[in-house]
Image 1 (spheres, rainbow, N blue to C red):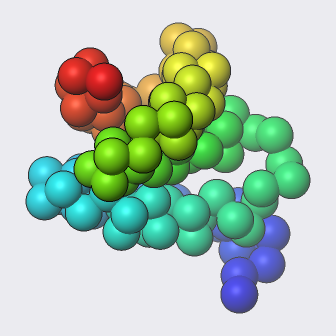
Image 2 (cartoon, rainbow, N blue to C red; image 1 turned 60 degrees about the vertical axis):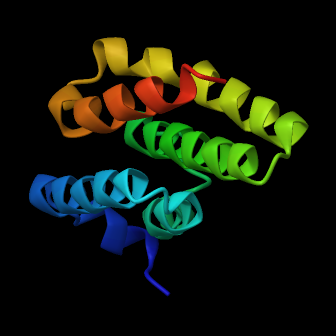
Length: 114
């Protein structure tokens, strides 16, 4: 398992690659796998309340919401969507917004139906 210092060494390019893979998984309706991908990054610093970590948490919850929806677990989907919506406003003032923008836009499109 990575240490806390390992995540802090992640470059913008590494985050960008992970989010690109996240988008690819969403496009394949591989919602659980998308969640797992980002959770690996999030897990390392889950106790740190950095904006980056909370934005990862939001995207993880969006993909879990989509997974629950695909399994007809609407109460679980609603709970996860609420967590996504709770942290989404952090994007407004985030200095590296462009890293996350495509992922949030895609999640918004997919979640609008629910």
